[in-house]
Image (cartoon, rainbow, N blue to C red; front, side, top):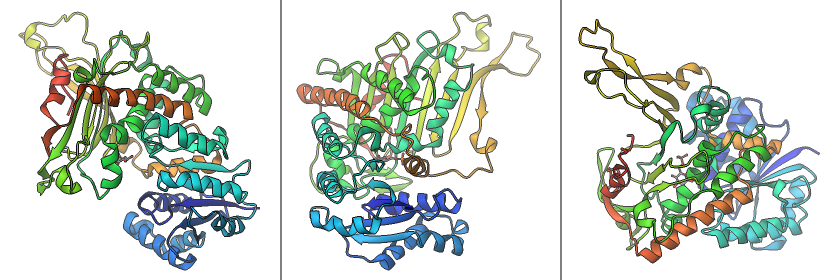
Length: 480
Ligand code: BG6
């Protein structure tokens, strides 16, 4: 019967930048099922040949030239076919069903959510929502709890939860999975991984890019919903969760959802002390002048392009341990990092001239260069006639060096492979998404009641100065 991957939104940005290059990467390593066909579909009236051209260009643009061996590229392109489709026309699904036949089927929906309903109805009517078919959904899955429920309900009319694979591409990132390995593959950290050992946690996802022509989507969302609701809350859940009994979809997601449900609500009474929002104005990025958000957008807007939050996970483990989160567009550099700041030693045995003892810090860098670094205090070499001198030094778990011969994969490679294999561990379950939206909706309602609007920050800076005050009030500095 063979197998097939059906790609909705096959000519779109995500398909060209991420999905086709990922599928190529998997195919080049012999990881795609033999004979698996990849059937693209979108509104454009292309034929198979024209779509293979689109794919060839996408690979040339997004894959290093030395990996583009002609025979490998041709073998990959030979898997591709294309069926044009207007998702709003139920009759249009019949040719698709015919092209797929009885293949073992995975479907990837990377289209505007406004088309989800019609697409799912069309798939069902054409007999493509049969048992065993796996459906991957790309964000945005709603703009609040109500709309997310509506989408999930629509999906559930045709696909069971076990067939539904909600993508959060952060879960496909190597270092995010490494966080699980670090926590639960080592005895070293877990005994300290709680309120007794940890002072606070910071998570920064900073980007240098601005709107990137995505104004239609982004202006309706803002940083809180674009980045915090999904990626950053998933990181919080992985940092804060209890040890799952095993690395499987139910155990891991059960633990994550408990964290998401334990987030202390931020409401009108606490938004001003627990959140800061900003919008970039003109400034510089990589040494070049760049316009402000509203000029890029071409209209006035009160959408936040920066958000910083102080949150608490209200349970025994995390009592009194703040989590500080910040993310934004047009910040000075692109990096994503989790910092675990441990407590200071209870008493220093060293003379004051050795300087203050700095608390240990574990920095998990997701990008651009994945790395895990533990900073510890060490003795400075010397005869110490006036007492021992200490200095903070890093212990690098330099992933780049330790695993130098391993190619870094695109997050979607892992996720696509798991989708094909039907393993949902790194996909987001409905209860997780809904817990995330519940908490996010509370913050947005709080902003509205409190009349909070974004403060300006110059492009190329670390957000409004209030974001610095958010942590400094607690005696904490953002780790840059
Ligand atoms: C997406 C957001 O989900 O994640 C984008 O919609 C953002 O606004 C992107 O730029 C960041 O992903 P990454 O993998 O580059 O950190």
